[in-house]
Structures are given as structure tokens and as C-alpha cells.
Amino acid sequence: MMRQTILSIDQGTTSSRAFLIDQDLNVVGEGQHEFKQLYPKPGWVEHDAEAIWQSTLDAIRDCLASSQTDVKQIAAIGITNQRETILFWNKKTGRVLHNAIVWQDRRTAERCEQLKKEGLEEKIRQKTGLVLDPYFSATKIEWLFENNPQFREMAQKNELACGTIDSFILWRLTGGLIHATDVTNASRTLLMNLETCAWDDEMCDLFHVPKNILPKIVSCSEIYGTTINADGLPNGIPIAGMAGDQQAALIGQACFEAGEAKCTYGTGSFILMNIGNRPQSSRHGLITTVAYKIGDKIAYAFEGSAFIAGAAVQWLRDGLKIIKHSSDVEKLAAEVADSDGVVFVPALVGLGAPHWNPNARGSITGLTRGTTAAHIARATLEGIAFCQHDILEAMTKDIGTPLKILKVDGGASKNNLLMQFQSDILQVPISRPKMVETTVLGAAFLAGLAVGVWKDLNDIKKNWKEEKRFDPKMPREKVSEKTALWNLALNKI
Image (cartoon, rainbow, N blue to C red; front, side, top):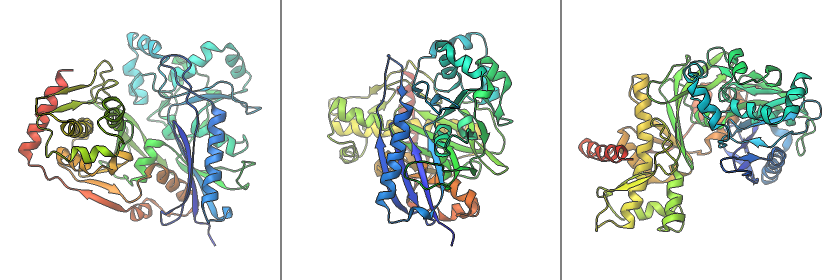
């Protein structure tokens, strides 16, 4: 009898999680372990890669312990991960050589500015689809070489391995036999050519990265190798699916057709829209990335991120102290029927897509003597929604067709008031899935496809289930009024 359970590993920025998911998309086991964040200097963010690995093993152990499923029933393992974070390890010994440099790290900002001044940003964007920013991996790799001369010598001797977290976990799970990364993670490095989905010689030369240290680029759904001497797991389980976390969420939301989009509301928010089988350049402040590659089928996506989403609610809780728990914001905001002209632009750490204004700062406008904490709470939720509005407006301008529906996930998607306002301001339906853990679901789908648990994308789409839909209710005149106030406030910062 075919084994039907998938072990899905979600290695995130602050914790590692593991889920067991059955063929009917039920979670039958789960575990989570946090690990320490390292801040050696202002603007620097690092992780101990061994702590990441141990937290992954601990999460798997707790997941299996919480399940009634026999470990022998695991058909495959899927991996999803924090993107852009990079590390080096010794190919021969497997020893980690430096703390992982995290996607949030800003130490290479000056290098990025230098490359911009040299007029290279447009070429980089054309080849990779990405903006020139310390967020992405290439300048981090370059920094490691410049500050550790022994690494260049190791690379010349073919002793150095470099990779994002997906490739590191795959290496460890397979006992050091497989050095590979999937195409979605590779597309976040500034080193992969979007057209060819291969490491680009010119980009590697520009960032002084020897290609022999890089992992093989593979699809998101295939058997890469099997488990070998991984604590808590029997040998021989296929590792068969990999994707970066936001792409995994797009897959978990079954956004397989061009024009379909999802928004993940976390500390910040990420919107990905499937744009079909050809990369396109955004004219409105978005980046282009690989959505997934399954067999010979490849899909691309526009991506836009807002730096602040749930973090704005945390600020109400920790900064203004007008709520005790983040979940209290919906109840407080519901005490008033409208924000009464109060507008909160949540640019607490600058503005992301499509504005890209790192110097912007948050603002609250429209305050009167009648303004209450409830108005500010409601304006906060509306500000979060308007950030998504601006990203999606840019996306629809780029693709030339209106959005039909937006699928949502993440913690703040549970806030019904926010979701209703999001639908109102976009004038499109919002769909919240029954299974909100779409990131781990996407990794499970990819692994399951490779080993036959699911037959094809249509099989996956049939299994996706909606929990609640929010349809637009606000009159268009009111939407126009709200949007005008938002744009006015935006133009003042």
C-alpha cells in the first residue's frame, strides 16, 4: 500500500517547524522550535547554522511524537525556508564555517550603492528580476570572501560549499551527498538568470562568486536524494520538494493560473502574483521571481512586500499600549463604524513596494478632539490594507488585467474586520483557506507530487478548501473617498 503522509519542514527566520500532512490535507502532527537571533553589530543579523539544524531535528522529533502515524508511513519530505539567508560549509567535513548571514542583514548596503553608482542596477534587474539591495544573497557571499581570505583558497581547492538554507538542510538530510537548491531559492541570490534558470556567468563574475561553490539548481518537485543517518528518521525517505517560503505559500494557495495572487500577512506582508510561463519586467516597482518549476513547467511571479503589517498592531500593543494582546485590535477597531478621517501610514521602517522609500516614516493624520483609541486601531488596520492595495494596483497595471480574487493567509488573515476592509478597498473578493498553514502545505504538495501522493496540479487544486470569503460591501464613492485620504497622507511623508 502506498505511504500517504508527507513530512513538511518549514525553516523560518526565528524558528523551525515540522508538520505531518495526510493526503486529505489534514495536519496529523506538528512541532516547532525557536533558535537564537544574533546581532553582532548594528544592521547585522546572523544565525548559528548548527542551531538551525538542531532546531529542525527537534521540530521533526516533536512532530513525530505528536502523531499517531508510523514513521514508516512517511512517503516523502518537503522543505520550505527563509529565503536569501546564506552560509558556507566545508564540502569534505560538513563543518559550518561562518554564521549564516540572514536576509534582514544590511552590512552590504554600501556595496549595493557603489554598484548603483556604477550604473549596473538595470543590467542586474534585467538578468535576475531583482533590485540591487543587501536583502539578496550575492553581496553577502562577496562579503564573506572579502573578510575571510581562507575561503577563497578553499574554493580554489573545491572544498567550499555555499547555499541558502534549503540546500544546507538537504545536504544534512542526505548525509552530505546532495548539494542542490531549488529554482525559487536560486532566483533570490542575484546570481541566477531568470531566462535560463541557470547560474549566470556575468553575475557570478560581477560579485566574485566562483561557480564551483554553488549548488546544482533543480526543480521544486523531484526526488533529490534520500535520508541518510538523520537523527529521528529512518534511512531511505525521499526528499522530494523544495521552495522558498513565499513561493511555497503561493503553491499552497493553488495559484497556478496567470493573474492568481496570494497575500501572506505576517510581521510584514508578501504578495505574489502568478504571471505565467515567461518572466516580465515590472514597470511599477515590483520584482520578478520564479514562482515554481514542476517538471518542465515553469511559472514566474511578480512580488511586492510591505515591511509592516502585523508589526503595526504590535506597535499599538507595545508602543502605544492601547491593547493588551494583538488579537484585541479587531474588537477595539469594531467599536467605531469608521476611522472618521484618521489615516495611519505604517511606514515605521520605510516603505516597501511599490514606493521603495527607505527614508519614509510612519504618520497619523486627521486627528481631532473626537479621535479615540478605537479610531486609531481602525486606521491601523486600514493602513495595512492600503499597503496591499498599492502593491496589487501596481501588479494589475503591469499585467493589464484586473484581479479577480485575492487568497490570503498568515496570522492577520484571521482578522475578519481587516479582511472585509481589504475586500472593500480592492473591490475584489478575499478568500481565506481552511488550511492557513499554506507555506508548509506548499512544500508538502511539491513533495507529494514527486512521489505520486497527488497526481498533478489539478489534483491539488481540488483538494484546496475555502474557509471564508469576504465580498466587497463598501460603496464605490466611499472607497474613492478613503483612497483619496490615503494618497494625501502618503504624499506628505
